[in-house]
Image (cartoon, rainbow, N blue to C red):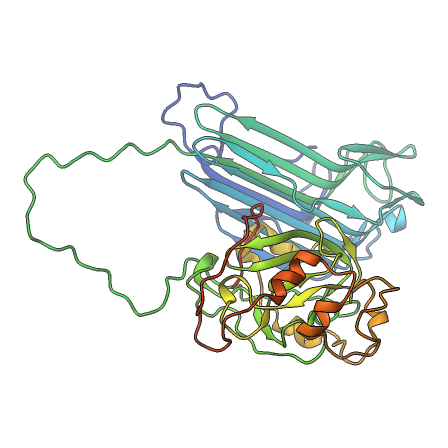
Amino acid sequence: MRRPLLLSAVAAACVFAVGASAGSADRSAGAVARAWAIKVIIPGQPSVGTRELDAPANAAVFDGAFSYPTDGSIVTASSVTTSVTAASGAQASAGATSQVTELTLFKGDIVASAVTGETHTSAGVSSASGDIGATGLSDLVVLGQPVTPTANQQIPLADWGYVIALEQKSQHLDKPTPGQHNVVTALDVFLTADHGGLPAQSEIQIGYAETNAQASEAAPLPKAPSGPTKTGAKPREPRSNGLPPVLSKPQTITPPLDPRGYVFPVYGPSSFSDTYGGPRGDVSGGWHHGDDIFAPLGAPLLAVAHGTVFSVGWERVGGWRLWLRDDKGWEYYYAHLSAYTPLAVDGAVVSAGDVLGFVGNTGDAQGTPYHLHFEVHPVGLLGLGYDGAVDPTKYLDAWTHLQDVRFQTAAGWGPANAATAPKAGAILLQSSDISSATGLDPPSLRRAMQPTAREGEGGLLLPQTQPPASKPVVGTGG
């Protein structure tokens, strides 16, 4: 039995029709998304599994352990996470994510530490596109053999079935309006013979995500009024409460995250308070997506976990910024840096405690006290885009502070033989230290040592010369 696609009669009003003619002007358009973490499909019986989510109604759920049947002889997982989002219109978009941790099938025949299915699609009046996000399998072992899977790889299961790893399907249309439909199943198990309590022709889907986006027809140009108009009348100005408009809402959930293996992002003395969700007029959504951690200029910024660095460079609001994706797929945003270390390059794999850069106040923070703007984006909410950021305060409170360690233990802050670097045991790098340290990114150090505006609560006091814009990023921060 195969999965039901979104292209059904029930959803036909929201998705593109494969057989639609190029001249179908009244064809509906929009966006839909669907996801589930685990589904067991048995011929002739209702399917069982974790909760299924469907958008346009945006949703996210974080569930605990799952077992089927109750003794876990077929499927067990320590936790599952699912989220969907969809927005229709001339610019339609959809996202879906499902994740399973510590998966075991058939008492160990198949195991994986993490299984993630994720996909996004978008469509406008001129084009449509999509991607599979963080879809992946961590520590996959099949019948006792470690496997590093490739897309749509079929792996035999002795004489009782096979599994398809990183299963991906996509469909693209250009007419009458652009559309994109993506389906991913991170792990899809098929039984060709009875096994482990399931009959032949059964299927187990792990990490399923499906999205579809279809652009609507472009709106016609407005016509000029044909009748007489009143002269001298002034249009009413909209009422204002003095606050910037809020375009989206902060998240009210904070998914669990084991603090082991994570460290506080600022080395040495610092302070912060819970400012997540506060009004911000110059960022996406109109609200503060993280916390500001205040520290002296040049305080080292640490990788909070083992992971991969990406989107390093300049952004108008965030200034010199970078992103870090940990091994669980969670993403962390660092903004307003004064300088980078050599580890701050796209694709660099770093460990918890590695120094990535230094505290500053670049971007829209110029003229304010030096600080790090820090955000947490759980993997289960990446489908919500930049507004999937959650309140980082709980995580920051739980993470270990590296205040009294020797710099050698914060591996990666500079070359091991850097004779002119600050001596081991130094508590904090000040601007005078980073001007003489070796192994650091020279252009970013020159920027850090340039004269700055007077610090304080006065906001933007001096114009700031901006470098050439870098490639687009997920969000901005503030």
